[in-house]
Length: 360
Length: 183
Image 1 (tube, chains in turn purple, green):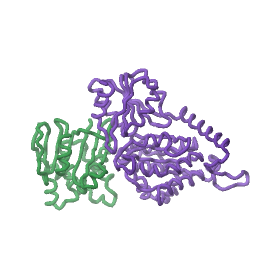
Image 2 (cartoon, each protein chain N blue to C red):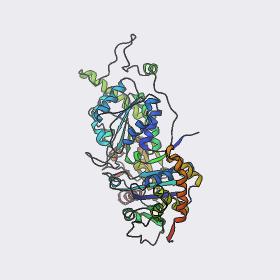
Image 3 (cartoon, rainbow over the protein chains, first blue to last red):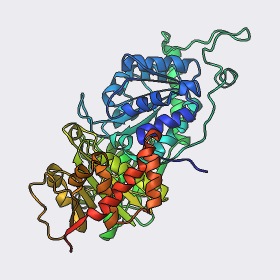
């Protein structure tokens, strides 16, 4: 029998992490994601699966605890909201440079600065273009439902280990705070010591006689070696672009216009599509599920079919740049967004489509 | 069937938990549901609201700009949401503390004297269930057996002894709801 629950997105990602065999969560509270740690603390998984849940003294400490845990081949994670994720960027860059798997959850609020505690999607650049320094990419998953908040915890760990790369779940205050029906996956055990040795031979689980020392570092003073290392990273990112693009299309078969939106904006835009279709406007929706790698090919294909594209995002317009690149500016692409914690309504999206794309 | 509902009032009136019980009951009746709360500064300022969607189909947006039903429990919420009820839609409000009654002519309006009744019966904690009962009388979207299951799921086990009291309050609400204007 399926286990159905009514949960907040923040609770769902926490429960799913326990079930995915997570070894450790390290965090620091911030609205609108505090329920992640609150839920984990309440569940006390150290009594059941042995998972560690720790409130660090700061975001910087939390990400470095993740760095340490990941070095040991453990499934570890952290979560925060925008200002807290900014604080973690140094650690994220180091983790990417040291090629370690981990899961990071950003439940985005409006910025810049401390901004507001209300939902936004203004961390797209930071998430997909590298918020920290150096040539690196995160694999970015954008859930649009509470169910996906749960599903992406397990998927995130799987991809993080597959590529030895941090995976970011880019959520927002809507998805984090709302409750929906969730079907939970069965429990998966944490890695055993033997599994860590077999699956992550690079990890610092303690030196054994049959091999040399494993060293985790993001530092290489030899520039030629560093260039080789970054080239290797580039090959990994290329492999992600080839293998991991995920997206969903909605009513695109006969579409003359297209909306591109992710996360909660995609949900709002889906209703906008229904409203517009009822008015006789043939519009479809493409929802990127991975923001890096971005679904360039399906967008390029749809660009040969539709007359114009509206990119909808709770920001001043960040993803719209990737949409324009994907369609090589061959057709009209415009951005519509509310920001600073204001959520657009489906009617506003339809009005923007009519004014900026159809009438414009 | 899709029913889009806003429930709004003061923090502490049980607005969010009423929504949660309704949503959980919907799941128990095998429906799609979403529950989207206000969690921001407005909530910290003393008002709370929640959008609940019940549907037979996958729910698109949990964020809505017009509602089939508005359940209004204070004047600030009346001011904010009276114009968001769809024409022909339903507005239920507790007149206690309302100074400016709704003037729209294109919606169905009902009152429920829930806070007065809850005070009389010493049922202040089940005030929100009286209101829910009024709504369910007008729109019996969820069967009582599933409301019972929804209460079981929503309330922690240590409070399950209060379920009969909550169910009684729902029945009280069904008797209490009064039509003001029908269109």
